[in-house]
Image (cartoon, rainbow, N blue to C red; front, side):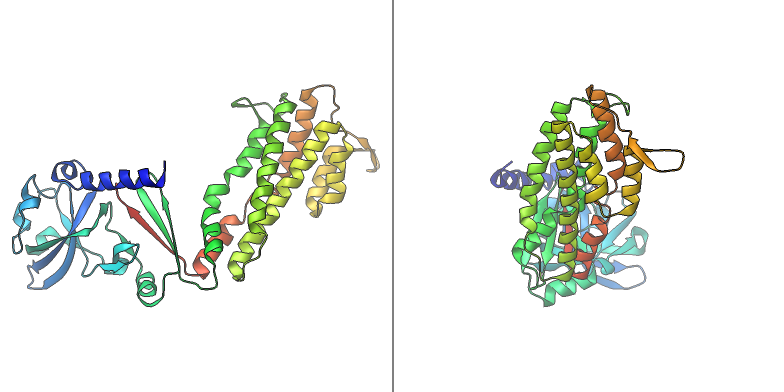
Length: 357
């Protein structure tokens, strides 16, 4: 879907969602109303409340005028209301409430809800849109340098950068390489070596070596293209740590792909032995792989290779799977989420989720 079509769909959804008829069928959709609350204990509160689709009967909402009393028209299903004393408006973001200021007020504690006006810039779905106070203060006091918006099926995620040490390019790269988006690259390797068609095969069941070759060559090219994006190391310490880690794991994947491709094409078990003996730095992995590759005599000395041969795809599949199973954690992005969260939190990158359906 193009940006234009997304914008058009979004506009239509907003206009339809908040019509009286459709909002009545959408109990979690709201529009904010500016009000004055008179509580039974005599306290007066001025601010905003979200009016959800089931709060008012059809036709009441559009006929409300300043000074009208809302409580008498509320559905009996409404047991409490959400109240915020202020909404903050920011460019490209819209209006948000302060999370710490959100109050839940039982309807029985309220004497009157006097309507002032609709705040049509603030409408959405679910909980009223909000940010923590520290983020509100940052948005008020520091310049917004970059905003990236990711549109999902029924909500938008705003990523907001206010750190001049982070370039626009680096910021986009960080957002695009969220671990949740790239973790499936491990799954691609897993499917390549552990599945036959769409079903998980037995460990020694044959796979098509031609399909493995084709898939791994394609994945290897893609990884090399992606590595080009991480050539320049950021000035920012936490971005640099995360990008260096991504680069390290991608290079591991490329080494694994290269080894398996060469192994299949040359039908030479020494290629697998070289990976174990020469390429890997981790002693624990070397030991595990050597146990797969070599037999030992009664004295514990290495005597000969014990990998399967090359008579058929079954033997090749078995060898590849044994290697992959030992290296699976080494090929995974185990620390990616921790380093990503650190890059986000240490740089005070604001993440704001706006639900609109």
